[in-house]
Image (tube, rainbow, N blue to C red; front, side, top):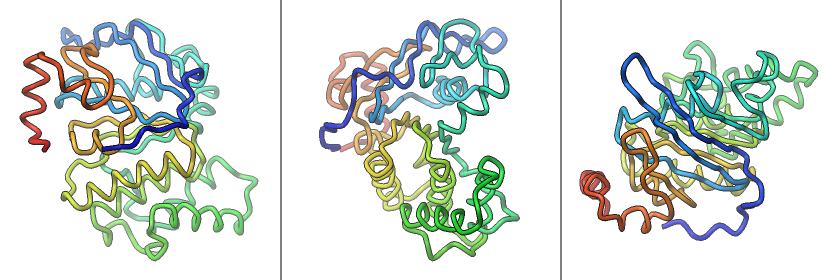
Length: 257
């Protein structure tokens, strides 16, 4: 169980969502969602596959547009930004993809160097190398700097994906199913890394998952997405003390002890 985090600033909302709605054809995915993320907080969004969790963070990052509602990130209303403004905002929001999204033809070093070359054009080689070693040390994989993604395990690829996200020093991290497809020991390592990132880099984060062990390990607060709306929120115990049969079924399915 995660310890109480004293560093959350509830006076500062880094993400603010009101009345968010999103449909695809005749299927209503999000039906008036309200959500706040506070500075320094790890917020877990729980829900079954296909309930709209990933749609939510794609809207937050500007990859999808809302049908209705307001989404503010670091004080900026995302769907009102120009392309250049959105690009600048995305530099402050790190997106850790479910499949790690590494370039197979690049070494670990080249994967980490790529966003620096693209977005920090004035940065010299020595400074780039220093940053690369720093984030690799943060995820415990300095020894893998010259390896190809194909030579890494699934857990190592997840770590390198997180390192590549961290290298631009984002204020907010978005994790999409960070433990999906990993064995239990590697899941524990990734959970520990998410907490380490929060502590070491002072990030705020939304963690999308249906893994209750992950949720319990990393979440300062959690919300459950059911039928397009957040039906439960609070601590792990508060969410799963509900008498809602859908919540009980979700808990029982995950076999958390």
